[in-house]
Length: 305
Image (cartoon, helix red, strand yellow):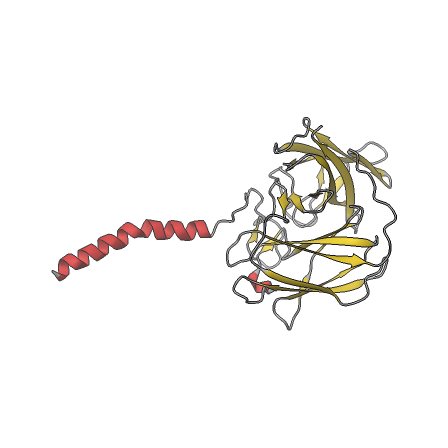
């Protein structure tokens, strides 16, 4: 009798083992498409750098929510042209604080903070740093360039379950906003001695993936040489005029920087799937070779008729 029970137990264990293995394999996979793994890029901590936010789809945060609690406050007066300290406190679904050891590296950083004003003209990409004493507390400095309402989006990947999390909040900058520009399609921008362009492969339609080709040239007509930014040769973020959400885009090319000294000359392609008709503000983020500062380039893309 005992022998039969033992055989039955072993048979049941072997029968269920593949499902157990499959469960943990699936749990270890990020939900977002991971064609942009950064395992080969310069990760000074020697930790796996998850691909993170590389989807072409727009995420509407007025509809989609994540089960995390976030408090957000300014520690100084928020005024145009003055640096202000901000504090963020994040708690996970179980109420525990979200500290630096709870977040995976995504594009060489723990948390990506996207701050943009209501006119879409002041966009800044910031990386909050964890407080050394209080777990779950994050801080950053911000110098607003425009008065009025500013929207903030947080983008990160918890290690407990490597699924992308997006959170949003807002704050107000003292002063009256004088004008709200009317967005019309503009895919060519001059900054200093450089001209940057976006070329779309076809008419941009709602719900259809559109390929956008990014190029930059100097005044001699030569293609610019790009240095790495957060483990890639360029980043791009698409905002809707209502600032309900965003799309965090990355080059579709498979080649990645092998070191911080690596460079790329030539075009880069981005894929964007707009959720509805209208004009979107797209901010490209690059670093020109031999330039210590990053360059932010605004484009306006019209979707639909």
